[in-house]
Figure (spheres, rainbow, N blue to C red):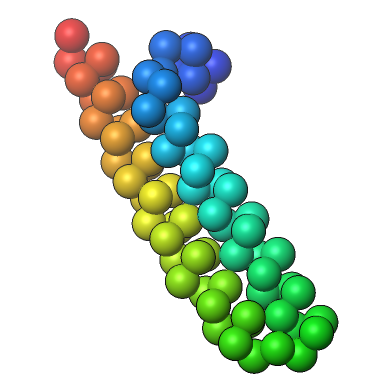
Length: 74
């Protein structure tokens, strides 16, 4: 089911998923860089980036659940 869903997923869903993963990864890298260089502003700035990535990821889970539910009802 996972492979089939990904193959039939829309481009916007795929962009949402990769965007969310990219923001989470960028936030983690900013956090690590801020902690290693002891720049508190950079560390604090990384938290909203991670938060936006998590919100986008949650939106992707909701979109996927709705589409799978619609397919199963047909």
